[in-house]
Image (cartoon, rainbow, N blue to C red; front, side, top):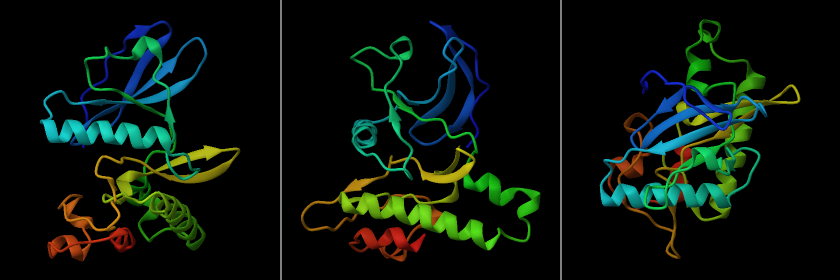
Length: 205
């Protein structure tokens, strides 16, 4: 989804640069500190969320803060100058991945005949590593799609990372879930059939 035009706001060196994306829960903006050159992607929740989705938002923030993996976008501390008051929903600060998302790569003219085999294998390997890590913590993503795979460049190496745990689910001891969530075009058959499902839905992406 597109987001509105960004408005530059300077706070203790921090400046709002541009909108990186928007979804059902909130908007992600890029901020840069003009003094230190540090960059951070800041996700702000929409205030009109109902109580159920507000709880889901808080869960996303908590999960992101405690998980650390090379193929998951890392949470950052919210810069004090950009933080909100204690009575507001928390912000989610994340590392900025400058390569955009996989959807933009797939839609690029040079990708009209598909991606190179080496690129496909790397994407599959990086995404699988992230999914396996989530599963090892009894978490299923439930919204795997090209828009939720972003690209970062580290020491001239391309790394693919999962983002957006807004629909993530922590499984209980039964390891089963029933909630109908996700993006329609990428739903696993179990969700379409409205039956109980496990972490195996991640492999239908």
